[in-house]
Image 1 (spheres, rainbow, N blue to C red):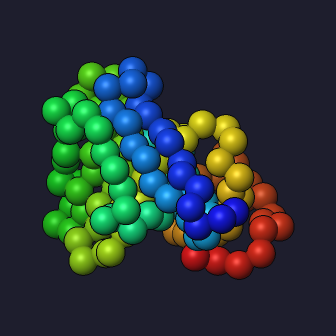
Image 2 (spheres, rainbow, N blue to C red):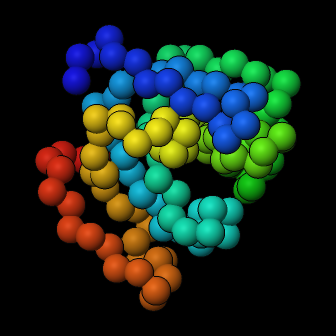
Amino acid sequence: MPDTDLLQGRCHCGAVRLTVPATRFGIVACHCEDCQQLHGKFFAMIAADREAVRLEGEASVQRHDSSATVVRAFCRNCGSRLYKDAQGSPRLLLAAGLFGRHTGMRLRKHVWDASKPDWYELPALDAPGTP
């Protein structure tokens, strides 16, 4: 995937749109308890350098301090999860589902997998590399 490829995503209602350069990091699945409670399952995310993220529809973005060091954003109109912003990180963790089915990326890594519930199993990853 060339560095110049762009991923374009949007919330469910279309009020918030995101454009980011395609990333070499791939998709990461977080199985922590916070993500389970907020998403009803794991959180599939794409790490993107924060200065490269172009966001349109700022008036529809609602932010929530989910901990002392993490802010999560969602669309105030439709409730779509948008991103996780960890204090001090150079990257935003964008909800992979915003970008549709054809990103050209693969699930590369599971994090907090010891916290996953017992009602699903983690698939083996065949994608090379980790973020």
